[in-house]
Amino acid sequence: MTELEHQVFSQIRAIIANEEQVIGRRGILVPLKKAIIADGDIRNVIDIVSTDPALAAHLLWRSTTAQVATVNPGKTRSLKDALIRLGQINIYRYAFSFYLKERLDELPQPYKKLVQGYWRLTESIAASAVDSLIEMDGVRIDPDEVQTLALFSVFGQIIALTAFAYLNAESEESFPLGIIKSIIDTQQQTLTLEAFESLGLDEELKDEFMIAHNLRQTRNPNSPGLILRRVLSMRGLLLNPL
Image (cartoon, rainbow, N blue to C red):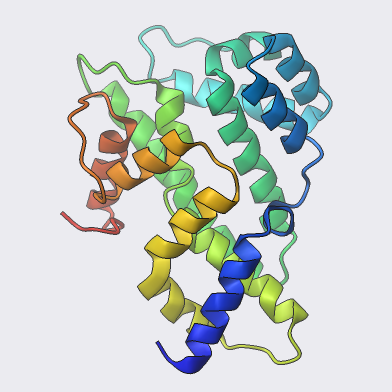
């Protein structure tokens, strides 16, 4: 790593450590996380989600897309039914990804175009991972856990590129895109794991991410990470190739 790359790498890590700067709109996420940590009445979670109709509609949609992999798929008819079925961890993961996508849409060009490419890749990976469950017999894996995990498949690249966009916006000099490409190519694992930690995502998500990328092994045949590992391997996206 050159001296300039090291300098940019350090500044990107500092930005990633600032949850509010990276994720932005925390008005829903903060009380939602507190309600989930408190493990209180699901009605509190429903009330919080309901304050943002766009988020509520998104959760209903996500719930329906994952249900295609269940034995008896059906359309979720109410937000309450969807949230009860999803479970609190999946609710927060979906909400986080929803607000992250909103944040990405606000980035200036060319970063917006680049990060949207990563996001389309993420959605494609998620769809393939959920579809793969339909073809598997005897597997007892929550499709929403597979889908929420898959939405973080290239999390490190997305967060690093977002942080780089903020860095260039605030700097007197503009750093070339080649620098962030080199950093992502060589430091993706470090940036990803630090992002999981700094942005307050659950430990289980990070563990399954590591299993998915072949950075950690498991004897659990029902691990969502093993399902995702197959998809990532076929696409040549594993951090630690098989």
